[in-house]
Figure (cartoon, rainbow, N blue to C red):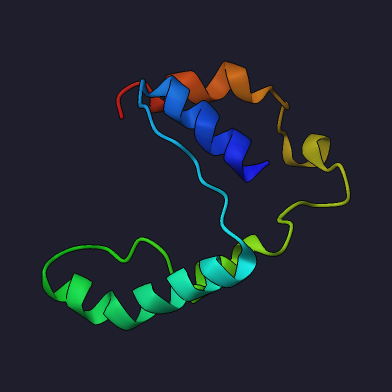
Length: 90
């Protein structure tokens, strides 16, 4: 699912690239490497692109089991109707 979202976002912003799925242990090592390099990245004015915290967050579904759209005053919409306009200037 994440791969599909990244590929869709890339299409909306006219970007080309390949999304390479990583095995869990490689993703965890990538997060650790960026954790260790984080202070250097910040020192030269760059943001840390990934961390072990990001890795752990992506391992858990971030969805609600209930439908509270009405209670929150939200009208659901399909992603194809929202994202292209949202990403148009990026």
